[in-house]
Every structure is written in structure tokens, then in C-alpha cells.
Image (tube, rainbow, N blue to C red; front, side):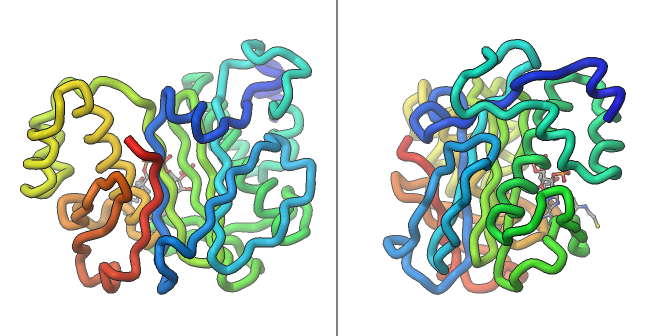
Length: 269
Ligand SMILES: CC(C)(COP(=O)(O)OP(=O)(O)OC[C@H]1O[C@@H](n2cnc3c(N)ncnc32)[C@H](O)[C@@H]1OP(=O)(O)O)[C@@H](O)C(=O)NCCC(=O)NCCS
């Protein structure tokens, strides 16, 4: 922490509304439940320091925090809904601080810090415990799990250069973000990530929308694999998605349970 404080202080992360996020991010959420998609409610959080109490989660509710992360000094002091490095570093556990300072690039460091401190503050607020006192363990394939939280509370985080997302729900939840960008090697990356029918949909999309559509497929698949806790132990080509407008899971390997129990949330393209 001392090292970090020498290089950085001040606000570094600002909450994003869904509209603001859509300008430069592709984000997706997946939950596994028996409720229908229309019954689910998404609550987007705008208090970057999680200073106000978060209303308790209802069983069919998902909370989502999206934030823009900037190199320290780029966020004006006093800007609403910003998150300060001093506040964030205080809540990390020693092993998180050790991982944090191992990132060579300051932007990766800031995103890791925002995601992990954000997850701690959000969960601490939900379970009414100090963020710094929370303990986590890992599932067999690396999914972080809150120790001693309510049994049905799940969370997921995603960090990319420039942005982070944290989601929590009382059901298995996965969130994934990707910076919106042009995908140069679309054909080769699609072979690795997409099923044949998904590649067909991608090829028939207008050229100007293809990169966004690819990233939508990608984040939807990752969100499912993160909710299941299996990550890339499952080939992404085997999680088959209808990208929407209202996205849905068409088929998944047996390890992920029935396809009918997966619900997807992503902004309209
Ligand atoms: C999880 C995974 C899909 C995310 O990759 P990504 O897009 O590069 O990164 P994101 O920022 O979106 O997500 C990373 C976060 O997902 C979480 N995560 C890691 N493994 C996870 C898993 N199996 N399930 C759900 N979430 C996981 C962690 O919080 C991680 O952040 P952290 O490393 O800072 O704690 C990918 O890293 C993966 O498949 N990991 C598992 C690898 C694996 O199974 N190895 C074999 C071990 S036996």
C-alpha cells in the first residue's frame, strides 16, 4: 500500500450510468434461475464509494456497478460519484495489495483496485460488515466466493483497462466487460470463440456493427461461464447464444445445467 500511495492519490474511478457505459464499453450479465427474464430487475448503482446504504437485494434483483477508471489526477476532485484511491486501498486485504502492486501498467493497477475495492464495499454494504473484514475463498476453477455471507449471495467482477463492473445477486451471477473497439482479426478470433451458427449471424451483420456484435457474443459467453464458476475450462464455442435484441442462451454443455435456466441481460445494440 505504501508503494501505491507514493505513485497515486485522489479520485480515480467514477460511476457510469448504462447510457454512459454504452458509449465505450460492451457489458453483459448472466444469471442462473428459474424466474422468467421479465421478472428480473436490474439496479444500477451510482454511488462510487458505496457510502449510502444499499437497499437489500430481493430474490430476483441484480445490482450492477459500472465505473470508468482513469489514471489518478484525471478525475477532478469533488466530481460527484468518484472513488478515491485512499478509500479504495484501505479496504483491500494484504494479498490483494500484493497482487495490485505486481501490475506493471498503472491503468491495470487502477482497474484491479477499483474492481476489488468496489466488490468489497458493495458486498460489505449488502451484508452489513466492514468491507475490509470480508474474506473470500476460490472455487475449484477460480471463482471468488464470499466466506460467511448469506448462502445465496453471489457476485462477479470484471476489470478492463479504463473500466470495471461488479455485480451481485441472490443467484449465480456473472458479469463481463470489454472496451468497445474494432476487432482486427475477426475471422480467426471468431473461429476460437463462436459456434458455426453464431459466425453466420456475425457475417450477415452490417460491417459497421460487427465488432460490437462480436464483443457482445464474447461478453455474454464469459458472463455465463463466470456465473457457472467454470471460466474457460469450458470452450466458449459450446455456449451458444442468441444475441438479441433481448439475448438468450440457446445451448450449453451439461456442466452448466439446463439452457432454460440461463437469463442474459445486455443493453440493446
Ligand atoms: C474468469 C475468466 C473467464 C475471466 O477472464 P477475463 O475476461 O480475462 O477477466 P475479467 O476481468 O473479466 O474477470 C476476471 C475476474 O473473474 C473472476 N474469476 C476468475 N475465475 C473465475 C471463474 N472460474 N468463475 C467466475 N469468475 C472467475 C475473478 O474475480 C477475476 O478477477 P481477479 O483475478 O482480479 O480476482 C478467465 O480468466 C478464466 O477462465 N479463468 C479461469 C481459468 C481456469 O479455469 N484455469 C484453470 C484452473 S484449474
